[in-house]
Length: 146
Image 1 (cartoon, rainbow, N blue to C red):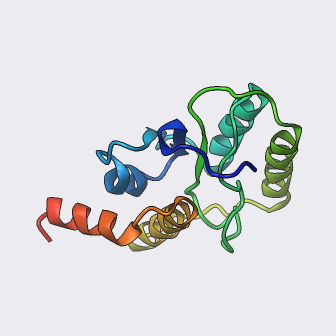
Image 2 (cartoon, rainbow, N blue to C red; image 1 turned 45 degrees about the vertical axis):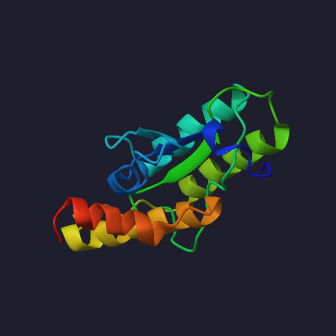
């Protein structure tokens, strides 16, 4: 992965609605929310972008939650291609292979558990880029009148 570049070059690929709610409107990040995509599909989309020359800014398997346990994934790639990086390509291919080694857990998750997984993914992403996760959560709570 590359050292973190200019935040205006960040494209956040995510299927996590909490990421958009907390980070949108800050003027720094472009967020592509794809709620209909699975964790694996987000990895594949990021891999395809990396193969097309986009820079990978965050690790595809960061955190201690196994990829088959959470439905949410957020990654940062560059907005525009900067040239293919073989290490980034190998990292993405490896992450998909690791994901595929885990047996999928098919279950209906209660809303509170989904919210917990959203929070974990959002916190990992925020920590990777130095975004104030707590401030983002406060903005959402204020907007929702809580």
